[in-house]
Length: 112
Image (tube, rainbow, N blue to C red):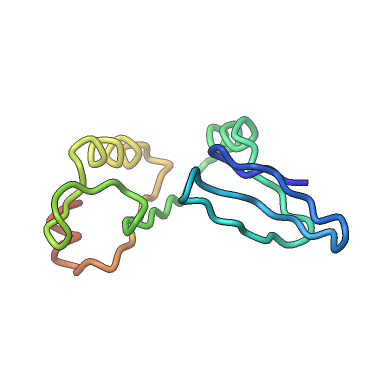
């Protein structure tokens, strides 16, 4: 039995021993079937590993993950998002990549 993070629920299909995770809330829920042996990340364990790491690669998908302000087509990252990304990037151990379907010029305008 596996529980999803962020308000997820648990399901157990005993007939097929399949594991499922429900992500989201209300009408925005998604049911995901996981592979045998799948384990949910434990925040305390991951935080310890993060603090001990000599180097870290952090890849963030901007599209649909980072909150943006403005209307569709004229969106840009919120100032507090840029501040958080800058704080993360200030740590010498971190290499941060933000990936997006936006143009190279647009990404440079926002993040350079």
